[in-house]
Image 1 (cartoon, rainbow, N blue to C red):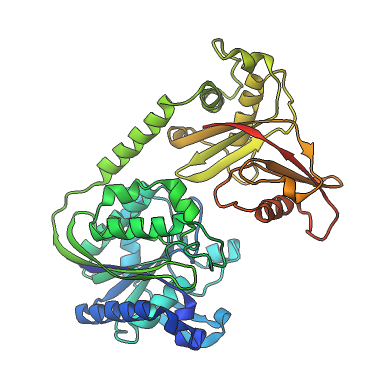
Image 2: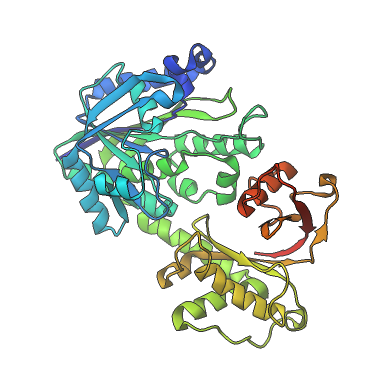
Length: 468
């Protein structure tokens, strides 16, 4: 029977490696000291295998990626340190068990092999999310095999359940293993951050580290998705997987350090593993998710409810529903452009709309655009029936666009924008998470339209009546 020895949250800023930082790494000395503490702890435990969950490997929207190459190698050449290179033996025996246990739980798995890397034109090199933590580990201990995993954009509950599968695989093997959840915290932590700044960055970092120190798993998995998105983190999903690996164990967590002089939060946390009790939280986590969705459904206004019912009806019957009776009078008498947005597990699942009305009233506009959001957004596969229970809806009713003479007339929280150049146009709704300035708003709209910032283009603005 295998043994889970411990788990760790470790950041991965390349600048922390002296060959990359060239002296700048001294600004995060607390993090360096903590990573060395963790590495010495790993040396004392002498694991056969280290499992790394990274956000910078083969990240898919709909699956977790497990690398199955016999050897795993990479370097920090893209950061000017090609001599920092590693080659690890893949623990294919444990990989096979992880895949097997995941499929038992219906967790979608992508096995990264030659065929997959050719199909998606993927690099075979290890990512810096893996290399940077192992740079410190190998300074103290190198007698281990590696398992390389990249989280997918599944629900937090599914990622937790995938972690349970990893834990099951370890116990069903003859391995002594540790797991590293690789990830940085908020990328908008301080005003000097190159990614922009939000005070919510520090709120997120402190909240997550406080909850981890007390192992309040339900509160972590149920954290506000708006806060997580606004913080612009890259480690939360790694944490979800790690918590699943720790499911059923007695755990003592210790936050070793937290700092962010470059505007990105770096947290180091050690999780000492005690007795395995076998009592799982997964059913409760799924139940809490269902309760949260049900509460949202009960608070839907007529606009949002109609969008949901329209998509659900179409998925099940493959034809549009008729406009129902009992809606507010303005939904029958008013015409306006409407955007319908779908979100699933905190991620966009589809968004389609009309700037100017195409139907005879708002109700028909919502019915048509809800179907389009679920089936015609080219960024996504069509919505399937099993997804309906997890989708959240919002409806934006647009005012007619007005021409803009100066950017001073814009406000990304109040106004949406439309940019036009010839036949190309791009639209961005107002008050979107992570879009805080006029410059960001216009830049995104231009990219959507395929218009270069150097070209001549016009700008229009509009307001929305948002229902969610």
